[in-house]
Image 1 (tube, rainbow, N blue to C red):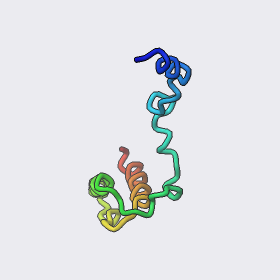
Image 2: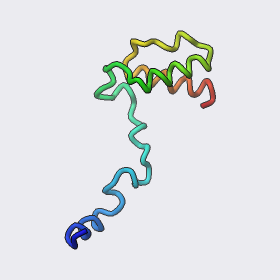
Image 3: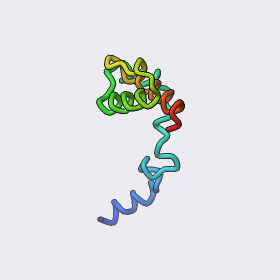
Length: 85
């Protein structure tokens, strides 16, 4: 690494990289209702996890393949609490 780049990196410190900051999971604190993409269809990962959790909770109605990202996230959180995950 060249000297100027190294100096800039040192001035920025670890906080310049959010992955090395004090709470790398802090982006999970945002309310799903405030997500810019919350109205989009849930992701494949969300669908898979929600399906698994709904089966574990014996609540098949908790899974709806037409859910939006924000609602899927809320249901996942609720089912995680219910199932102790």
